[in-house]
Image 1 (cartoon, rainbow, N blue to C red):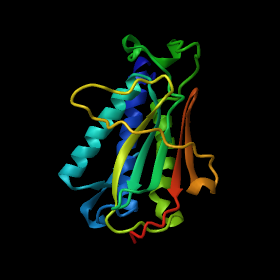
Image 2 (image 1 turned 90 degrees about the vertical axis):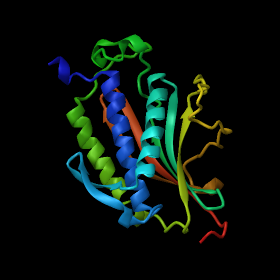
Image 3 (image 1 turned 135 degrees about the vertical axis):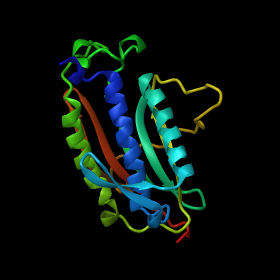
Image 4 (image 1 turned 60 degrees about the vertical axis):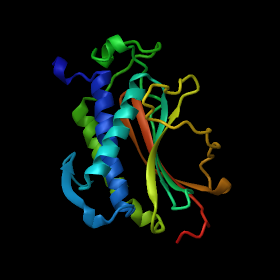
Length: 224
């Protein structure tokens, strides 16, 4: 019974596993790397793609591990996979909004979440098997993202960015896995300010919720 009760550790690990698969899927769908450099795999009982390049896999794994470290601090507002042009101009942002993840003391990360009162809020969390069904539905949407987006220019690259909560402390450990940047301007979700937002899906796990959407930046930088 206890093994089926989600803890913050199992919740964070489930999300970072999902994030890893999502990054590979985005890179494949948007042809950031040649699609022939990806192999077929399965996750959440769904057909996915995974890069075969060891350096790409290593970079993704290191980035996701750094995200997980910040999640355990309760400091993360959003995680974004950013595709930018060869002129270093952002073109697309795949945003995973995780601000409603509970903030759990380090001593309680292995305690079932339903038994915790995190910041005065207590509520149910779905079994991980039910969350995986929602991960599969989200992956299905990401796997079809190219059908609702224009092609990106040749020579694009990507990175992973973390936006911290207002009270979040920027990571200062050495070696430094993150490069501090200025906060971006708020996006109102409309096609004004050069950004078009396309919703993907919300994953609800009882009292825990995270949302995924795509921000498309209208760019005329001539990279095409």
